[in-house]
Amino acid sequence: MGNFIKSEENPLKYTVIKPYKESHISIRDQGICASRCENKPCTYYCPSRVYCWSDNAIQVDYMRCIECKACPFGCPYGNIEWHYPKAGYGVIYKI
Image (tube, rainbow, N blue to C red; front, side, top):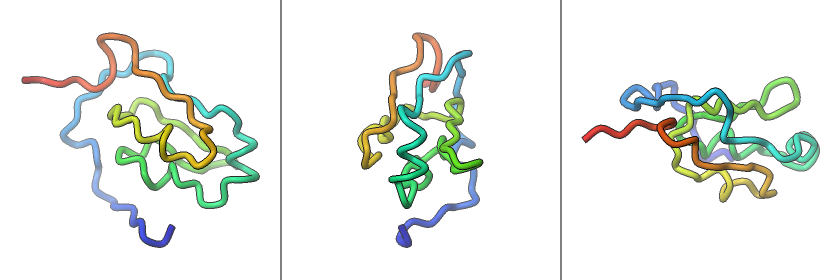
């Protein structure tokens, strides 16, 4: 994972997100993250930094999600469950 660099710039500074009270993202099995997933790629490829490794588990900050839907495809173990947020919530697009 040496090719990835985490920037300190806030990736959400131009994004408006209206979070729902329940997460639309979940980890299917934290044991897979802890024992089989060596590099924790979700902590790198998510452009809005939804995932972080803390306390021997992947923490999911769903309120940061920009709905790019990269996470289910980027997880090498298919261990991320992702659904669109409830209608009226999530990223707010203004024309």
